[in-house]
Image (cartoon, rainbow, N blue to C red):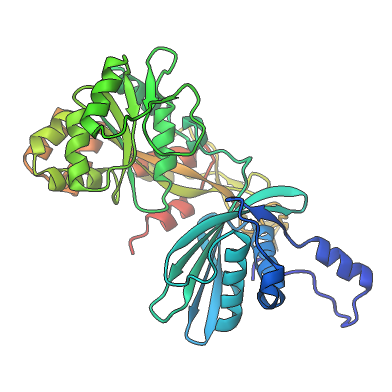
Length: 440
């Protein structure tokens, strides 16, 4: 194991002081986000079985910097997985009834219905660990055998990944989004698979708009604080097109809307984008896949080609730990192969043994990243702008490969080119890019 699972003593009889300190290092659950205070007294048996194991599981996850826990029973046992910077690591193994007790306990603390095990539920718990505040989001999903899958997301509310700068948008991409939304019509789209950060990408694009010059409204149900963006109240009974017309009459230039989820909405959004610039998201593999999905839904390549202006997708990669990353001098052949500037003098990688004066020296331990060599993640950005070449491919019903090839020909930013930019900046390593882009 890379991380310690907690302090252990060679002496079976630890002191009371050590026990007290261990207790203080457990998480403190401080109330459900939805305000439903759990009735612990009425659930004494569950509290006895599940509270301490639940605290230990979440505490271990936070000590590892895990952003997510997945706990799923399989037969008579259950295995927890911790996801650290998107990479899964094995967690504790336990009997299925113990996993059920943890799941039910966290549901109770999150103000959810513990009697309902047949519906997906979601909630959250205000939490404190080592004097630091967290939000622990709880999601449960029913399983065919009557059990539940538990997904716990540990969120540091002080960590914001919302601005274009936070996500690593290049200045050129920020300018392109500003210029496109300045046209006051057309669709600006973020695309990606579930849990890939698509909503965050969409908000980052929205923040590229110059809100001091252009009027930006929102009819989306997003709960995030959108500075310089005004909520536009929808009248009861108004359909989407009527609302867009009202926004246009109110001199709105850009409108942020809920994600496109089906063919009917896709057609409405594309028609509405003739009157005002629309910013939204769509679930798809990547930018090219989003364009093809819109064509499939609308059965109108001309409408898609005319109204889609740019599609942006992101892929998260781990960031090298700045405390322990290891510098090395790349050889010219490597730089040429990677198409990096020949004047590049240094690149970085995770720590590895090196030879010094004929002896092998092991890297020093790193408490910051837990000896993983990485700390946090950053987005690689792919963008497909609908140029004349892309538009013709849409009309000719070109596939995803053709769209990506044309985008590269037009000099657009790809995952690969942005990844190499991050390598050159010392943000990540070639090994990390190879891991992320490795074909299944």
